[in-house]
Image (tube, rainbow, N blue to C red):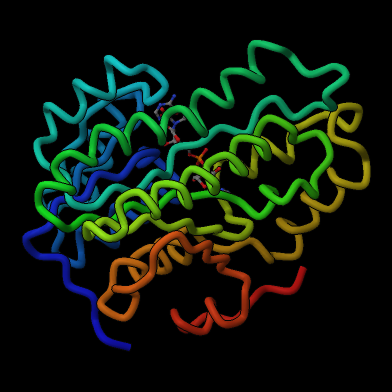
Amino acid sequence: MIETRLEGRTALVTGASRGIGRATADVLARAGARVIVTARDQAQLDTVAAEIGHGVRGIAADLSRPGEVDALFEAAGPVDILINGAGVIQPIAPVAVADRELWWRNLEVNLYGPFLTCQAALPHMLEAGWGRIVNVSAGVASGRMASWSAYSAAKAGLETLTKVMAREVGERGVHVNVVRPGIVDTAMQVEIRGTSEELFGRENLERYRSYKERGVLRPAEHPARLILWVLSPEADELNGEILAIDDPETAAKIGLTPIAR
Ligand SMILES: NC(=O)c1ccc[n+]([C@@H]2O[C@H](COP(=O)([O-])OP(=O)(O)OC[C@H]3O[C@@H](n4cnc5c(N)ncnc54)[C@H](OP(=O)(O)O)[C@@H]3O)[C@@H](O)[C@H]2O)c1
């Protein structure tokens, strides 16, 4: 495996106050990129930036708000690498009873947010003739999980958005891909395990609780490694692809084995 170095590149990582986004910011900063971390709480971002070091900067924004996204990119300056890691899971509830506001909010954060950040990042990338965007999706984009309608629909939309963008900008040096990170030991999993049986179903709840008990959740550093690989010279031709970490071929690229659950 060739080592990936990102000196001279500026990377903006969303959802970087914790979990997969934070781990990704850490990996990219160690690879030499100038990293900007974003999420909603400035104080938390300042802590993350200080903990990672390497000149990481934190700029707060609610990614579902166009004005805040524009202000974020204005403060960040030109961005060469955009990692869309921010995400929310709620509402976990069957469609028949799902809260309408939470349902719409999910799409605003998980789908409209990445649309806004991509739109803000593209002018510089296109002008430079080089850019990389990684959108963090989820296996449930296929629609296999009951009670996750908003999340799954938003992630399916994000994957389609990725493929459309790849066609629009791929030939101009800007590559857009998806990473599906597997089931990862983050605050989002704590939230899932805390759902009521009534809303999530007993079997689903027991399954997700057992992942934690059996120690089969991935550390956030694993998807961060896959995201770094997408930015590597080996992946230079990759555009419009969906990379699932638990796909054996993909896992092997970063020296991991798929986790059987
Ligand atoms: N964990 C898993 O098993 C798993 C599996 C598949 C896919 N994923 C995906 O991986 C990504 C990261 O998930 P995670 O597990 O690391 O989740 P997490 O620990 O809950 O972190 C979510 C991040 O998103 C940020 N965020 C939420 N709403 C936001 C908003 N409106 N504006 C800006 N930032 C916002 C949060 O920051 P603030 O709340 O501080 O703003 C936080 O930094 C998500 O896209 C998720 O869907 C996770």
